[in-house]
Amino acid sequence: MRVFKFGGASVKDAEGIRNVYDVLQKVGFEDVLLVVSAMGKTTNALEVVIKDYFDKSSALQSSVQEVKKYHNQILLDLFENDKNEVFVAVKSLFSDLEYFLTHNKSPNYNFVYDQIVSFGELISTTILSHYMNFMGIQTQWIDVRNFIKTNSNYRDAEVDWVSTQKNISKNVKRKILNVTQGFLGSDENNFTTTLGREGSDYTAAIFAYCLNAESVTIWKDVPGVMNADPRYFENASLLNQISYREAIELAFYGATVIHPKTLQPLQKKEIPLYVKSFINPLLKGTSVSKGVALEPFLPCFIVKRNQLLISLSSIDFSFIMEENISEIFALFHQFKLKVNLIQNTAISFSVCVEDKFDNFKSLNTILSKKFKVDFSENVTLYTIRHFDDMATQTVEQGKKVILKQVSTETMQIVTSDDK
Ligand code: ASP
Ligand code: MG
Image 1 (cartoon, rainbow, N blue to C red):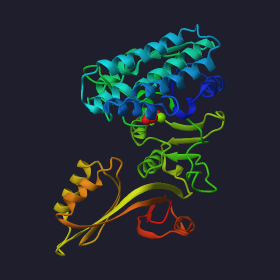
Image 2: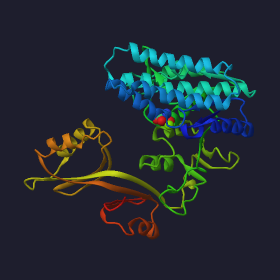
Image 3: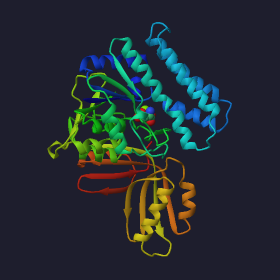
């Protein structure tokens, strides 16, 4: 069995859905499981619904209406008349969403988030699956929540591998085209959970692992894994073959083509991962598989913007030692700051972090009681895997380097004067 993942960008409009049909015609669809994300920016639009709901904003109705209008337009573009039963199916999902919004009593933000945001994937797969049937490809729509079981850590749920494995091996039918939702799961009480933003790649890996799939293909709007983001670097080139290890490193340092959690299950069973273009599905793209000989010889560039560089030094010239460091890390963890680089000397300690949830201010109040805290906002962190002089120069040119760290394979550079 092959597992295919189509992300939001690939199904952002009617054209995109038709293209999925074309891709399937070209590469085959028997014995395939399709994992599909919410259409386009639907997850973000549903996040606005959630915000309006909690703010008790009068805009709530119109933000729900936005999501409805967007999907309705796609339906009208895809199906020649509104007699197709997909219209009833999608309408009923929106009624469920509205029912939840009017009847929910839970004040738990993360719980409510998952119950609402999941409609994105439920709707996209309903539309896609009906469209394939309409075009003559029979599909089996499956509700992923009956397969992927998780704990109740809403918005970042962890997979219960034992029951997930059982459900998948027992109930996924082979030899047909299955269509299911990325990103979602359900907990012990059958409440919907999600696996973290951009989690659909991971869903594909979970199914592949449990099905002992032959391969996973992530269909993208780029030709495959590139050695640099073409938006920021001229002359970005395609990496034809990379090892799991290299892919894990790249994902770890922030390359966004593959969700970091995706690789581990695949690597365990040596299931190859292909990253291919949904525009040119017959091109080879990138293959990720076992083997050191596959390391790229090209330098790979990863850029992370909007980072925060924090330097802590001891107030009294005492050493920053293990117990301080573990305390500092516990605080970063508690305040959900993601550490992307660490550097320390005897009396100072610097970290480059991402403050996604705007928590640094509160953390700083605590840190300042024990340390002298200096920080620079809006710095950029460049990581170069397999760096060479040219690569380093490309990054440093015209920028103010404020920190640099070098290991055998990886160079990290923090610059301050970058947009
Ligand atoms: N729709 C979800 C998100 O946008 C999951 C995914 O796209 O992978 O985060
Ligand atoms: Mg998405």
